[in-house]
Structures are given as structure tokens and as C-alpha cells.
Image (cartoon, rainbow, N blue to C red; front, side, top):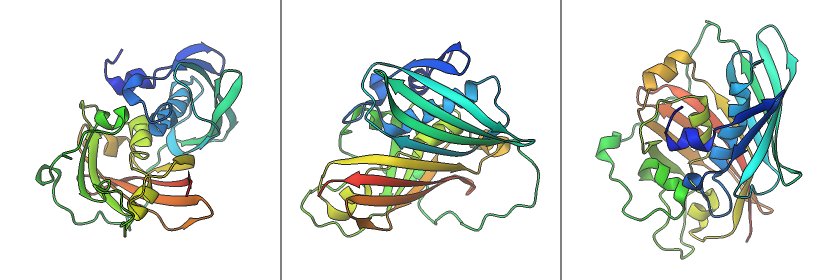
Length: 268
């Protein structure tokens, strides 16, 4: 079994049928409960481990119904429809007799087809040319990643002077680990709340729902290995206590591996 902290955090033990047992990891602790990205990866991992799985992930949507408490939980992953080349899943995380998170997953058998990438990777400095952040990580999960901010790091002064919600950052596991669908799902949530950047004001926030679309097949995963991903994230609107976030993840070769969207609650 892998000793990598990420694999430990998303580990699940089969309980029979569609049920799996898991537990939160202090290595990925957030301000309240675990980092949402590792929770999303855990829900996806239940599908990845399921003996009835067909193909690899194409889409993952996670709805965070309640904060996950530190400790044990149970995940139920059910295939609700299997077609010739696609499969649809419903996943739930149960804790304390209640549902804390729900997810839907679509998997598909990879096929060779016509392909083109219209969204090119931005022209940015190489990761080795971007310094590490000088500040200590605010929460534990951030220390699990090596992040090199090109723009859009957290404000140094929380004075309401923010003017942009865009972040560009090179990211990879701090302890090297080969890329897979679960680690992509986690890194897709590896951006700080857009409202903190746009306002330079630290207000209470929480992700309500996030979706990840996977564009990487086996070849792209293998070629990326333990290398860097370039993440770019930006909000489009802040209104009525909710803000969106759209983001992309490219590997160093410029291949777009995943796109992701979120809706985030914030308190004024």
C-alpha cells in the first residue's frame, strides 16, 4: 500500500456491496474539517475502487451538504446506469447518521477520435523561475502541495484593496506522486476563495458545489507523471452571497487535463 499522505487520506476499505469505510486525515485539514479537494477525491476513489466500474472518469460533481467532521465516515457508491461505453454513478458520504456530501460521477471507455484543444495554456514563466511563497501555510492541507504563484496569491494586507480574482499558479504534490484522476480532482479545488482576492477581505466562505471535467487519458497521465500543473482560476460574478469560479489545469507540455467550476457561499 502507498505511504503517500494523499493515498492515506483517500483510502477506503470495502465493506461489501457498494459500501466503503474511510476516515479524515489531519494532513489535509482545513479551517473546518478536511480540505474539500481531498473529500472530492475520496468520493471519486469509491468509484475507482468499485468492482463494477467501466472506464475512467469524465465528470465529477460534488455537493457539500454539510461540513465533514474529523473522524470516520462511510461512502456508498452505486452505478445507476451502465451503457455500452459510459456509466453513471451516485455517491454519498455518510457520517453520524446523516449525509454530509453527495456526488455524481460519469465514467467512460476511452476511444480514439478526432481531437483538438482550443484553449491554449497561457504564456507564463517556468515553475523553476517562480519563487516559493514566503509565508507559512494558513491551514495544513496547503503544506501538502508545492505552489508557485505567478499572480493571485493571497493578499499580504487584508485592507479591502483587491482588484482582481484571477490566480495563476504552478502546483504539484509536495511529496512527489504520479498524477491520476483522484489527484486531479483534489488539485482542481486547490485555489483559495476568489472573494478573498477580489475584496482583500477575509470573510467566511464555503464551497457548495464543484464540478470537474477530466480531459486527460492514460497517455496524458503517464506523460505528466509527477510534474507540475499550471492552474488558472477566476470568478465571473459575486452576487447574493454566492460566487462562481472557473479554472483550468494544464501540464507542462500545454495539454489541458481538466476544467472545473464551483459555486461558493460567502458572508459579507
